[in-house]
Picture 1 (cartoon, one colour):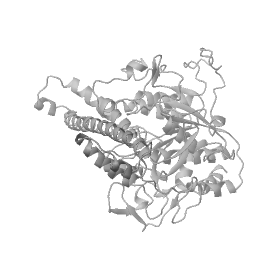
Picture 2 (cartoon, rainbow, N blue to C red):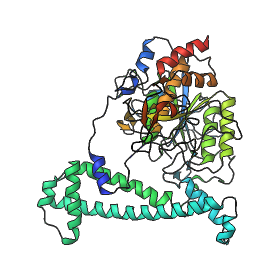
Picture 3 (cartoon, rainbow, N blue to C red):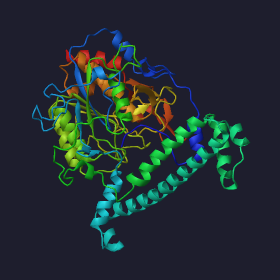
Picture 4 (cartoon, one colour):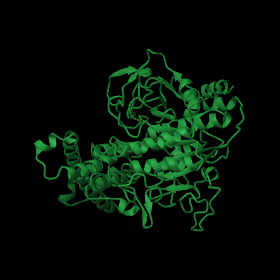
Length: 522
C-alpha cells in the first residue's frame, strides 16, 4: 500500500473537523538545510556548496502507483527508453514490453487499469478460507496456518463491518450537509448561515453537526473536500480492500498463479491516481534551478516510472517484475515507497532483490507508517532473504520531522535491527498531478529523500558499488547525543533514545555522505 499519511477516519466527524484546520507549514525546502534544533535537515545545500561536479546521470526507478510524466517540474527529467519508438505498437527493443517509452505498468491490461484492490491480508484469508473449507474448528487449529486463519477471520470480518457502516454514515452525512448548505443560498456558508436556516426535524442532527464542524473548520468548501476524501477512502476499504468477492486480476488478465510470469500489463504509467508517485518523483528529481515550484534533491537524474501499487496492497508478483524491469532497463537506484503487513510469495521478491544485487542496483524502501517496531512485527517487502542472509543493496528508511526534540514522526515504523536510518518524512512539499504541489507526510516521503541523496552522491562518484554507497549513506548519518530521547512512535508519552530507533541511530546527511564517498572512491 502507498505509504503517505492522509486523514484518519476512526474518530468520525470530530476528526474531519480537526483535519480541516490549517496548520502552519515549514519552508517548502526545510529539509535541504543543515540540521539545527528546530530544523533537522540533511545539509543538502551545504553538499551542493562543496562544488563537486557530477560525472554521470543516474536513472532512478520510481516503483509506485503512477507518475504524472507531464508535470512541468518533472517532464524534463523523465527517462526515455532509447530503444523504443513511441506509439508504433511494436516492441522495438525486444524486451517483451510494447511501447514502454518511459516505463511500464504491471497493474493494467487491455481493458484498463487497476485502481482499487484488496489488502494482502484479505487475499491470504480468502486463500486459507478455501483451503480449510469443510474442516472443523479443531481441525483448522491443528493446521500450520490455523492460528493465522483465525486471526484474519476475526480482523477482516470486524473491519469490513466497521468500514461499511462508516461508509454509509459518511455518505448520508455528506448528502444532508449539502442539502442544508443549499438552503443557505451560499456556496461557502458559515456556521451562522447554517444556524439561520429552517430544516426538517429529520435533518436537525445534521444541522447541529455541521454547525459544530464549521466552528472548528471555518470553511464549508474545505470541510466538504475533506469529507469527500474520507468517503473515497472508506469506499476503498469497504468495497475493495476487505471485500473477498473483488478480484482486480480480471483487469490485468495474467495467470496470477504463475509468479514467474513476466510479460503482462500496459504502458500507461500514470494510472487512475498518480498523486503518490508524482510526489515521490518530485522529491527525488524535480528540475533544479528552473524557477518552477521546487527543487528536487538530485540534479543529474532521470526518473523511470514503474507502476505496481494500487489503492490497496501491492502484489508480490508485480513487485518482483517491477524490480526486474527497472534493473534490465538501466535503473541504478530503485525507490519503493510501499509496504504491507502480510506476504504472498516472498521468494519471488527475494529472487528479484538478489538479481538487483547482482547487477549493482541500490534499493531504497520506506519502513512503513504503522508506528511499529519492525524488529518485532514484520513489514513486507524487506531485506531478509532467508536464513541469515540479507540484501547488501537495501536501505530501509524511517521518517523524521523538523524538531530535534521530536525527530521521529509519530507514525513511522522503527527498529534497531531492521530500519537502517531516518530521513525527513513530515511536511514534505513536492509535485502532484495537474501541475500542482502539496505537502505530504509519510515514510513514503522519507525514502525518496534518501534515494535522492544516493543519486546525488553516485552521480559524483560513479565508481562506487551499490554496497559501498549503502555503507556511505549509513556511515555518514548525523547522530544525536545518546542521551537525546524522543517519543516512541505509536505511544503518547513513552520515550527512548533516538539512537535506538534504527541500525545507524542517525539521520541522513548529504554533506557528510558526499565527503565520505570521496574518501571511499579514492
